[in-house]
Length: 284
Image (tube, rainbow, N blue to C red; front, top):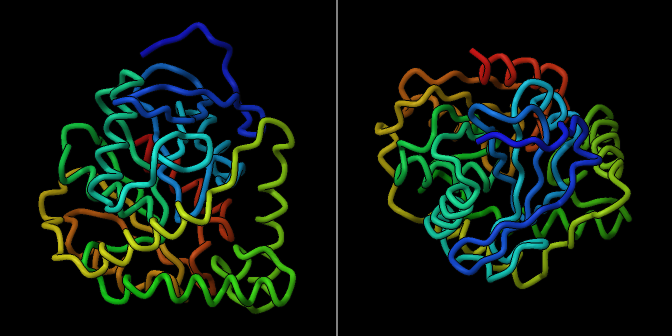
């Protein structure tokens, strides 16, 4: 898929667009050189287009066509948040098809990684490469406890007048606190055409979908033959680090990176090292 549009190199200035698939209007942004296989970003729980770290998006978009999007019922996308990850994967397939792409690379974080796993199981022909960060397999140990951890960390953020992501994504030591504040500051770099925040109803539906995913029968990840890069921190409360190791064992030939003294936001804390590794993986 090619276009004569000027190349956008900064996520802070990537225009918001929409495309309609199966009656649903999906909001998305794209940047980087067009042509070839795009890298589609699958975002985390409660996140919208504005929750991607611009340092990561810009680094990948320096050499690849990058697409970020709001799931159905989230941010500026219409419709209602699906009740299951399988339905979210079907939505993602419809969105990607509506843009005219029949092959993509996937960059996924947390809940986005759960959706991406269901997508590659149901549509293996669509995906060339997978980057799965901060996520775990269907039926994985303690994934169904994410809701409780989330509510606890949101409460802590309210009591300390902090952004919830500082608690959800980073350790509460000096290094983690510094990394968390730097990450939150980067998210504010885009000052115009910002996305609508997720509604409480949509957020609650996503939490229920994650709980169902955690209590479901495990998927056969042996069917994944695509090159896969798996990344996590070594102190992971949301989706325990051991689940990334489980993914690594079950996806043949996958690569695993565990960053030290970091949690759910390890790729944001170590964004320089991570973007170097991810860019190389997606280019090779």
